[in-house]
Length: 476
Image (cartoon, rainbow, N blue to C red):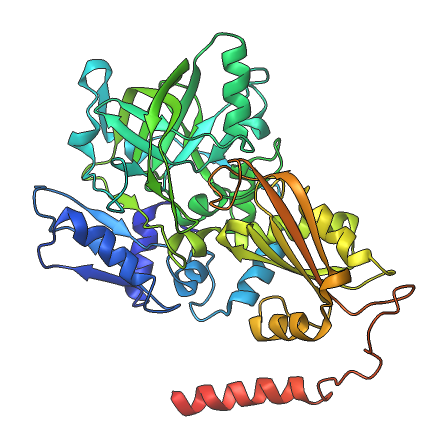
């Protein structure tokens, strides 16, 4: 099923027992973030959370943890909620092959119902803002999709970027944004500032569930997130035209904010409790001036808690990090079987591959570090054989414990790029990266004693399926 807006998806979550309505009065701080934090600690079936009785707000509607479990992630893709994570990744990869699917332009977008412009813009009157972690430097819009265009090629649909970036509310009509250098919006901003121009942006909040997934997806610079959303939905993504910028934005958004990143202006932004499980400090970041806000009647403020994994952020960006890396690697190395890059947005990746010759696995790992996403994120790669499931951590640990000889199987590559948010970077933006080759050596690499491995019995696979079926029948 393809969902056209957030509300439709929330209704499905409720029908599936995956949305929990909190009816008692709660404090905006710390209750809202603490509840979302707790949801990440109760297991893979955690529900989305709905709050509409928030003290201090007369008419707040807050949705949290919408993608915060594998059950919810499956439902976002139109799959049964009990679909195992490996099958979700495989289905994600299968749908990727349908890319591109052209979007469908629609009129009468529901976010056109109410408008604030110019001096009347006041985010505080539209959104029930609250801090996510005690040490945050302010309120954040952390699940928004930011739309920008290449100033040198504004008519190129594919170069119109839709990305998720942290946005700190500075005051009623200003935001500070962190454009990580490896991301497309940073390139757009650099081009605009070199011409002495502001960079127009459209910021959308409360989007349909697939749009939230693709906005955090490491795609090619000229690949359209809307066309990828269509592939993942199995139906064209509905879009509409933002009235001030003329940009393409999701048709079903709750709120659309339009304005410009002001050329060469900077504002202290942060600190913020990040997806790395650590705070990143305050830095001088670009400033967005908001010129127009459009929103639905009684808009739903969707936010996510992020901090020490696992949180909603990890479910949201897990498969959409694994699959691009898999596709990019397999295009050059068809031997690559699977990629598990769900850990801290791919700062660590586990890759299974067949091998052509000695040293091949290390070469694949180095290529993973130089993919578009790998340049800024992939800092540690664990390579395993094709018969080791990278999503099965006991198997991965077995491979590391039985096949790794540190003298020849661990490589340290110094002074490579990484996102400044990586806590271990020194200085920020640079790190030493590591490859651990836990594959079986092949000719001409003759090290070790691996000639007589045990293998699963041929009948074991059928028996595993049978036991799962019997167990499911027994449990009802």
